[in-house]
Length: 127
Image 1: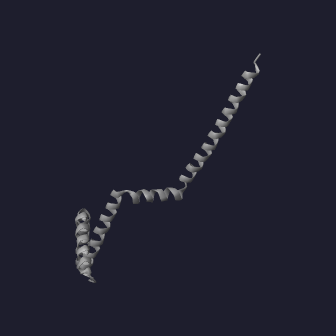
Image 2: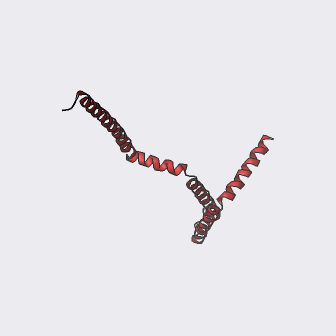
Image 3: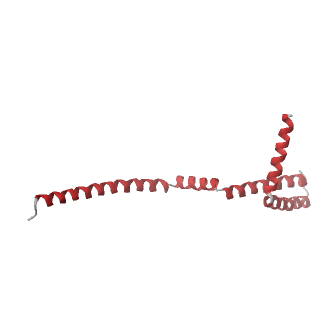
């Protein structure tokens, strides 16, 4: 027959196991709620945009593409203007494509040049 001491030890071990079980259950519920919140479509979209914004390579590529596209459109407008000539429109589109590719490829140089121009322009205004 078991003594009182062994029964008390078993009761203590059962209480410890129950407390551990309750603690694990609380942690599991909290983790489930975090996982549930992170899998909501709005949070997934928000996290994707944040990762795109915070990735330097993607930022640089977007800036390069924007600079190239803008310069291509400006070049096309300068060539075509308000002309209705199909030849000029085709030439403008080809020029736009070429300028966009060339500028987006070398956008670092263009951004450096533009930065220096703005800096010298604003320095002259201060004087």
